[in-house]
Length: 94
Image 1 (cartoon, rainbow, N blue to C red):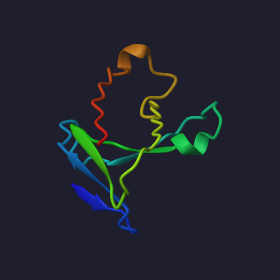
Image 2 (image 1 turned 90 degrees about the horizontal axis):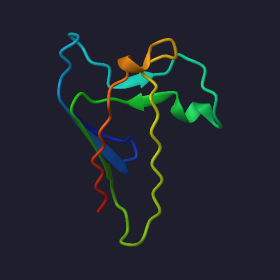
Image 3 (image 1 turned 120 degrees about the vertical axis):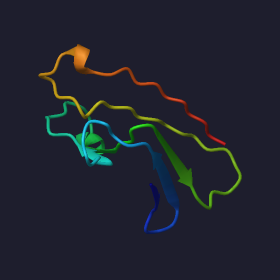
Image 4 (image 1 turned 135 degrees about the vertical axis):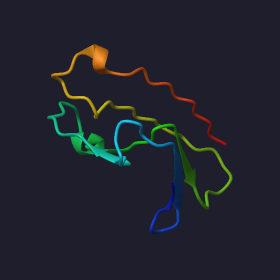
């Protein structure tokens, strides 16, 4: 899957298919109450079975400060820790 933003300033690619179902939701929505500052920031997330790559288009050469936020919004609080998968991130910013 390849997607350009409507403004053409960013894009992402996603690879893989889900073996759990016939269709895969590429955007997941949190259904539980979040107890943090600005919870709307963590209500929706893009999801990918294998890899996901974001592209910032038309960025000028320079130094940028990047803040990454990670949140588990797929599993609810009533599920045990054993239902949570281990997450591995490989981040490259060039």
